[in-house]
Length: 428
Image (cartoon, rainbow, N blue to C red; front, side, top):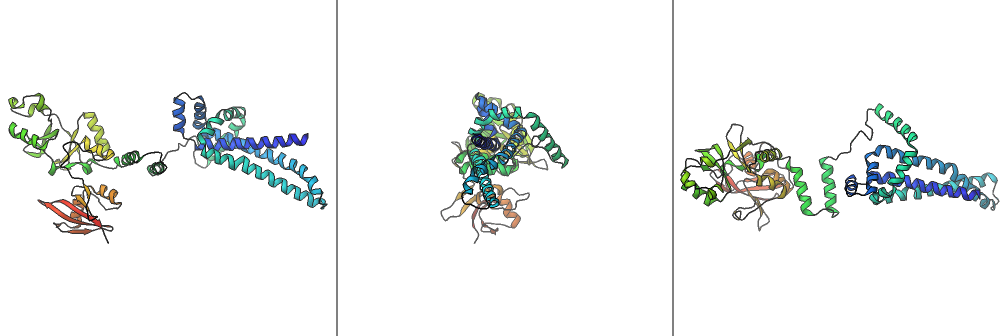
């Protein structure tokens, strides 16, 4: 009878070890956001689980204490109990008493260790890692009850450990918040995409957001040379003709040249007002948001939202107009190119040719080229491929070929000294 009770106690100790090991790994592995979502839906078990996650330092100490106690219990009770059962069996071989005791002890020790490691630790750990959410929800309540009963001892041991940690100048688990770097988040994002948790579009959008803060307005602007503007000194008929030709929604209004931007005018004004009777654009000009060309596009978007404007004028370091940026230009950095019914004449900045080469617009940004071709062109103070070519050959003309480590670039079209088209292929 006594042996049966002791064996039952050994089994209970192994089960308790499994409970504490599973709890420890589950609450570390489970996603807090998932528990928060379930708790917000009214799941009471999830609320208990959140209590564990939000006090991770304390409850991990509780698990460690439980594992230690059960391990000591197994060592104190398990081996002697099995030794009593095994000793009569080994005596039948008529071995010397010392050898019989050694063999009996070794077998008993092996069995207890095997059961403790496999059933009490390895199997529960594997299950807890794979089913962390289920295990956390299942074991949260009993772990909380146990922690309340053992609070004085847990508090004493955990407090002593924290004092020791601080002596080494380190933070306790409760004081240090777990955060992920941008590289770690991108790795997580890539794994989620590869495992099918998110689709290609979601992966692309989030990945573009990481690049969003790294880009400036100068990199995405419509440069001064390509700006379509309205001159306040022109006649109304001339202005209306230019609007019908270009078909843009908004236009910068200038006084003689593009360095003197008076403001922005919206084309819809011409649908609601008889502009020809007014005889001037001046009553319809709205203030233009003017910012430095190197402003981060994230900050520019905030400024544009605050100013309630869809267009900003970029100024260079000398006070002249560098170009313009629209809300659409900024959004395209996240969602990709946006084309409307009037964009059919626009060409893509990077286009594949039939011979396997690529044709680039001269204004294509170096950063876009680096991402598309997976290269690392040096572009300090240079934003576009045309500028990059001029830094390699300031006398570049049609037919000029520039070779980088991995790519070759050939100027195929120029207009008034400006590089319009560049052909690209892999360097051999």
